[in-house]
Image (cartoon, rainbow, N blue to C red; front, side, top):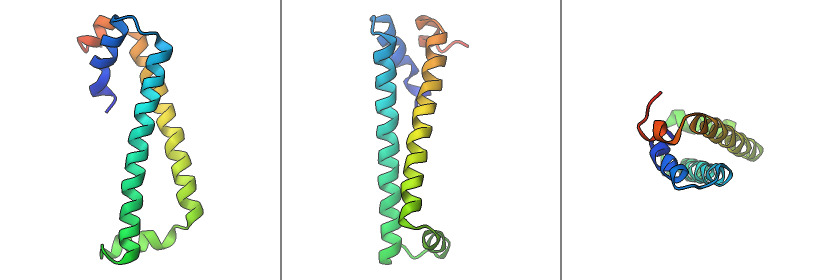
Length: 105
């Protein structure tokens, strides 16, 4: 997702936006994607528990997880999103704005 947005962020850099603000935008976008994915995941888990989805493999996987496991999973996903956006920001700011815009290595 972030790689496809590199042109957008390079345009923001060319327009003079500070790196700190671009980093915040990256963080917000990644957290939004993680939250959307987690809500869809929870929707599937609830559907399995209510019997709307009858796939034996998924049912067995849901049986093993407890509420504390879902909290841990969410925390790990948030940490990973923050680390991924940081790595992308470093790579984005390492190149020149025009190099990123042209998608050069």
